[in-house]
Length: 109
Image (cartoon, rainbow, N blue to C red; front, side):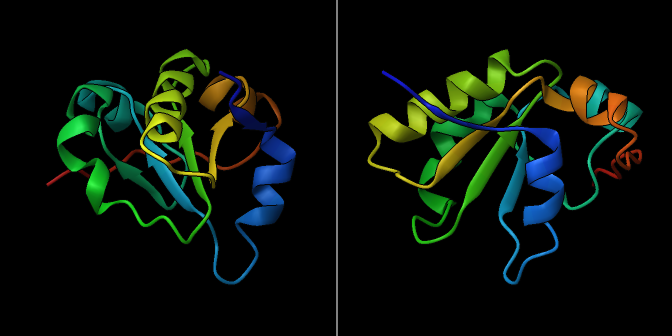
């Protein structure tokens, strides 16, 4: 099954659009605290099956992780659940940071 991918520069442009895509970070909590993409929402991959129905089907959703492997799994799972508008951030936050795009520590509750 093929998944849709987006690169860091294209995502940076999408985040300027109205409405911006939903950006979901599927890494572990310790990884999120170190660095995250602004506006990213925490949803560790292991919790995704429990919360998948809370993700809207009518908006673009971009999943990301460290390198793009876990977020690709998230995209595959969501595609199997009938979601069409899900994208994997190619290269993950590593590529995002290499392009000099903003990262911040995620504040978790």
